[in-house]
Length: 230
Image (cartoon, rainbow, N blue to C red; front, side):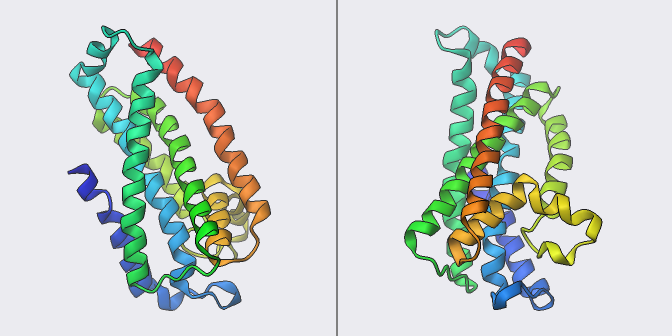
């Protein structure tokens, strides 16, 4: 059921932004809004999907499932690795579905297959890094509802105060610095360059730096929190 409902929200966002807000938003350099939007939708989709890691782990702890895993001869990090990898596989399926919807509403990548796949690869790696961060939240929350309540206030500023849906130039000047260089915007800009053209190398390097940095910090933090919690 989770796999069935996961694409529903991004599909609704695609339809909402393309058909309701699209006529009022004019990206630079003559890019069509749907082409500008889709890289942002991909990143937003996997970012919101990462919440399932926190909710799932909190639920497993609440039900005592993690306690049963502790009795098995496995590394403690294996539970977290299994959870984050399962969420990564789910993200692959969701991205494929959202891609099909994007093409149906007029999305047309212009850089070729390999750059497009490289963009998807960066998105999925970023999603994997986020999953480890939300694993920390799931292991710290008292139950799944609390995990969800904690997760969304973190995600909303990152996804909506970003270049995912509108050009940063349209935002107030005091917000533009944050909106340009925070991780979601950097990953969106990298994928936008890879998928529809424009500045690419600098954004790709920054996106990989953010993603690898998050993994280096969050993976040990999640494993440590798992050990202390269980």
